[in-house]
Length: 212
Image (cartoon, rainbow, N blue to C red; front, side, top):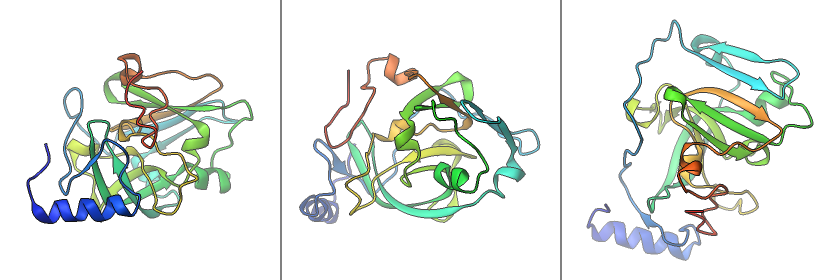
């Protein structure tokens, strides 16, 4: 899976010394493509994303409307449960915490979890506390370019690690769904596709919580 490159090995050793390489992981300079099912088509004239569940008011945004929401760029390390890690990746998109601060969405107090709904009925779940971190992004761009279809274009959730922010929880990368179409704010946890298939529901990379 990992390229045989002495420069890659030296970089991996450096990152390990910096405390940025989680247990059981190896650095990759590539970006492996891993998903279940085909890449869905995208029509910007009909595409929408819904925010629903434990909100004061549900919201639906068209592609044009979503791209007018407050945006940020954040550099993060990302860690896949299949044991690759990619470092210093730049993502651009929308943070849920910004939508709350700007009062674009109003979350009810009994909401404790975020359920991500993607194309083909795929779901995954994270605690709302993680979804409200600046390391959880609804991303449209990767390293300055629109995300490729294989990696979730037009919109995917991304969860990663910001060096120096060890207080923030970091799940494995599958906890950010590709081809996102809905965000459900829920009072109860709802394990998704991979969680029901035997993957760990918490998925903390530093505790190496890969499987149930």
